[in-house]
Length: 102
Image 1 (cartoon, helix red, strand yellow):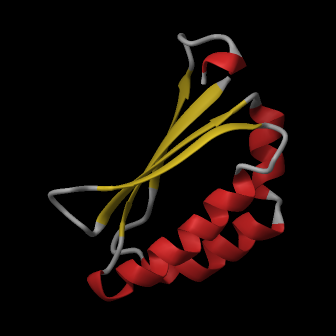
Image 2 (cartoon, one colour):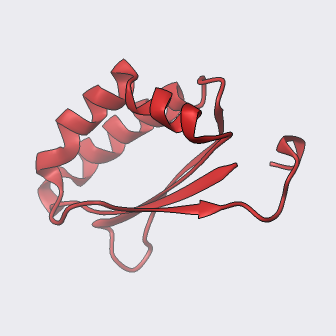
């Protein structure tokens, strides 16, 4: 399993739109067979800062996700709303090792 944290800073005037479009991406990503988890969070101290926490079964599932229509639509829509380029950091999952534990 691979967990990726993605930090995104959004221009203040686009926060509501960003949230709406990211929820749509979240809902569709959760339907993908290779997705184990997708959390979408907003900082309590800085409302323009968001964190995506995504867990996929393997690299193939991540590659598939990046080719989906909903991801492509999300990326094209929200890219210009970002105050800074998004930063994604993949992590190797140590625990839990069982999908049922998620």
